[in-house]
Length: 113
Length: 448
Image (cartoon, rainbow over the protein chains, first blue to last red):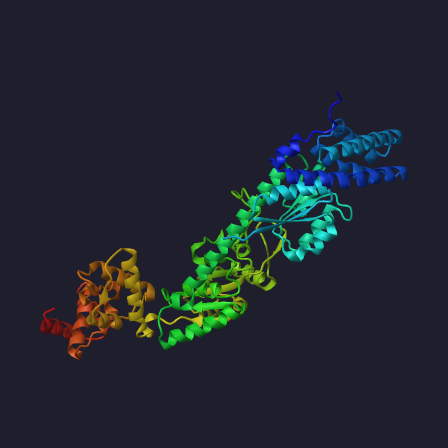
C-alpha cells in the first residue's frame, strides 16, 4: 500500500488535539496553496526567477508543517537554483515535480477533513 | 497589574501566521492581531502594539523597510524578525537597525517568540514598577513633605520652588550647611516634568581633582591606566533628568572652564574619546559660600557664575525660622520614635523654650541630632529641658540666649574666656581689651 504524501502528526502535536483548529489550518492550506503554486508556475514561465525563489521560500513553511514527503529538500533546492538563476531546466523540473506533489496532497488532505 | 499585551503578527504565509497566532493566543493575556502585508501593519500601528513578529520576506515591502517605518513610529517598540533563511549579514544589519531579535523559521520559532514576549512583558512590568516608584518618590518629595514649617521665609522658599519646577532654568541653592539644599534640589526635580528621568547628585568637593573630569563626562576604554571599560559620566547619566552639583565653589578653575563649555554647548566628549555626545539635563547647583565673593577673589569664573546663577534660592538658617524649630523638632521626634519603636513623646514647655533660644549653627541637621539624643535621654514620654544637650562648640553662642543681668553676663563671659585660654589672665585681658587688674578683681569677686 502506498504511504501518505504528508504527515499531520507534528501539526496535531502542536495543536494538542484541537480538532477545530486542525480543520482551520488545513482549510488555510487548501485555499492558499493553489494560489502559490500558480504564482510559482507563472513566474517560471515569465523567467522571473526572483519571484520563483520568493514563492518557493513561502511554500517552505507549509511543506515543513505538513511534513510533505520528498518536498522538504526539493523546495530548498528550488529556492537555491532560482536564486542562482543558472540551471533553468532543473528549475523547470523542480517546479513541475513540486506542483504535482502539492496538488495531490491538497486532494488527499481534503478527503481527510 | 498589567493589561493584555497586544501582539502583531506580520506574515504573508497565512498558514504559518495562523500557527503563530494560535500559539501566542493560548495565553489569554495576549491580544494577537495578524496582518499579511507590511502596509497593513504600518496602517495599524495606531493600535499601539506592545510587540511585533515581522516576517522578513513580505510581498509589498522588505522587512528592513517595515522595521524602519515601525521605529519611526515608535523607536522603542520590540520587533522580532522571523526569516525563512539563515543569513548572518541580514541578521546583523537588522539588529543594528534596532530589531529586538532575529529568528530563523523552524519548529522552535513559536517557542522562541513566546519567550521573547514573556521577556517584553517582564520589561513592561519592570518599567511600570519603576514609574510607580518614581511617582512615590515624587510624593515623598512634595514640598510640604520635604521642608517642614510655615514661617514667612519658608513660605517664600515654597513659592520659589514652585517657580523652579515650571521651567528648566538653572537653580542655585545658597545657604549655610544643614539648611536642606539637597532636599530642595530633590523636591524641584521630583515635582518637575523631569520627574521620571534620573536625579543624579554629585558632591564636587568629594571627588579628587584628577578624577573629576572623568566622573562628570565619562571616559573611553583605554583613556588612562585602569580604564578597562567605557564609562558613562554623570552628565550622560542625568540625560532627561537633573544633575545636582553640590559644593560647586570647590571646583578648580580648569574644570570650571570645561564645565562652562559643556553647559554652553549642551554636548560633551568622554575623556579619551572624540565622539560628541548631546545631553539634556537640568542643572541645579548648591554652595554654602558666597559665589560672587569667590568671583571677586578670582576663585570662580565670572562667566560660569552668571551661567549658573539662574534662579537663586537662598535657604534661611534655622535661627531665622522662628516657630519652624518646634515644628521640625516634633517631626524629628516622631520620626525617631517611630524608627526605633519608642513610645511617642512630647516636648515640655521648658524644653521648647530652650530649643527656641538656641541659634543652631549646624541648622536643621544639628536640630535633628539634638532631638535624636533628647529622645534617647528622656526618661518618660516627655522631653524635658534637661534632656536637651547642645554641643560644646555651641556653648558660647548659647551664652546670650539666657535671660540674665549685665553682671551675670559679665561673669559668664569672663568664665568662658578663662576656660578658653587656660586661665591665662594676660591673654584674656588682651582679648577682652581690659586691664589685668580688672580681671583679677572680677575673678576674686566672682570666686572664679
